[in-house]
Amino acid sequence: MCARPPSLGLLFGLAFLLHSLCSANATPLVKGHQQASPFDPKALQLLDETLQTYKMLSSLQEETVFSAYNWMIPPGAPVHADIPDGLKPQSVARTLTLSMLKPNLFRMELKTTDTNNKVQTALWVCDGTTFWTYNSEKNYYTKHPAPSDLAGLAKLPGMDMSAPEVMMLLGQNPFANIQDRFDGARLLPPLHLEGLPPLDGVEIWQEDTTKNLIRLYISPQNHLIYRIVFETLPLSSSHDPSLVGDDVDALAIRRPVSSGDSPSTAFALVCDNKFGSSPTKEAFHFSPPRGALLFQPLNSPQDLLDYLQRNMQKTDLHHMLRGRKARIIRP
Image (cartoon, rainbow, N blue to C red; front, side, top):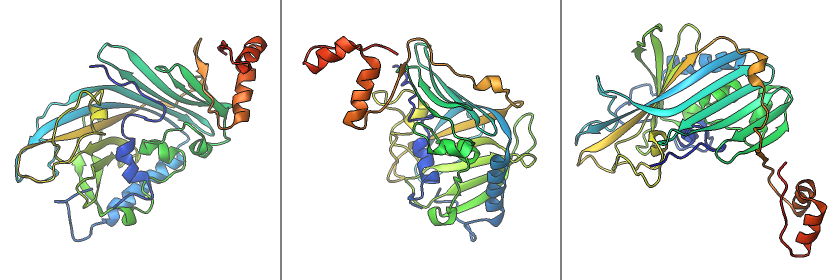
């Protein structure tokens, strides 16, 4: 089974999960976590402090590694059971690197390794002059004039903001109107990870059991997100090799079990962030690889004519207009 390579429209298979978190039209994560005050003021304060921290950062160097967990939930167990203690994670062959340097330098790189050990890369780069995207599997790139600040990147075609960290760096608020869109937010017990101080946790939930549970673990010292956990509801099947490439993609097509009458499979994706020293300006340099094609959407007949004039020899254009086969010249 070959893993599906990344695309410019999909960051790391989590857009569908974060749609409910980031969309203003999201239907208001989970039964079994109700409490007297569904929106803990301390949880909301922690989310706001985190948002303000990311907005105020002058630089960032972050690498995200992914791991997945599968386990069985017996009939009658809570719909959302925590990851069992001692369960070993499964590695996910994807890494995400995020670099930022204000006012307008940005780089996001997603690497995916398939079962044939072939690495595919998706890039989003703003070098201060041009905003580039690149897809190694399709071998094409796009380019647009760079905005004067990071907030301008959010308005450009091809910019992917699936990750909440990216949204916050670009001046967006993934927690906007949270009390209108969700059923509750609460603090979690501190999480202890090796080499880090205890992390504060926030869980956001919905009563709608077709949604996913999201937990954010944040450092009380610098208010950066060190871990994000996405947990599905019990699932009717563990995998569908005809539709997905790895466990990240598997989340998109898993179907919740409608009742607790039979054992089912739960799935959690864990995203762990590691932070490095501030990147240098050289880290944001990008040049399209040799042979890569410039992708430009054709939205009108004039766009098509302009494209033909730029990319075809005059004789080819003349022959094509007369109904003959034309030869396209690579840029």
